[in-house]
Length: 219
Image (cartoon, rainbow, N blue to C red; front, side, top):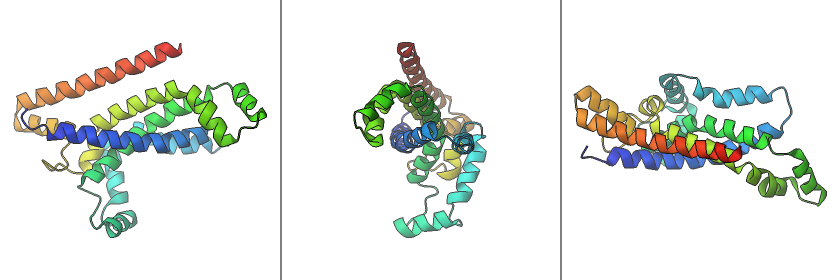
């Protein structure tokens, strides 16, 4: 494997997607953990749907929602002067949507497991809800959130179906490492396919070890 652009693009896209997934995912997880309503499960199901959807189906939905013929797609193009599809920004969107459910589910579980008596004690001493969340709840849930972040990063890094549907497969521009591995297999380039697969597998093993250590410490 002589061209390492797909790896660097994958790492960059995954890093940005993970940051976005953490910002939106932790906020939504907090609301879901604290919001007592019959609609809570419905909202969570909608946002975690990408876990069970086939990646190509998810990519089709994103392409339909954000393509040049859609309202959101035309709005993006008018704001930034270029379409979202078949760009690195499109790859980031696809990776973010793929990573978001893992962050939400892990963060919600961790936040729900925080002892409410500790939060109530913080309120008694005069802390606002925002400060209780920032100083008490989120720090106590940090390990669980960290596990979700790690899994979300791994999912974003390994995304294929949604990325290739929304961002395309343009060498040197939008071709991420999973897409490059697929291309190499199709072209009979076993060396490139093997190297790319080993790199992705190695990163996945590191992430799983990290997550396992987090849960071991929690126990």
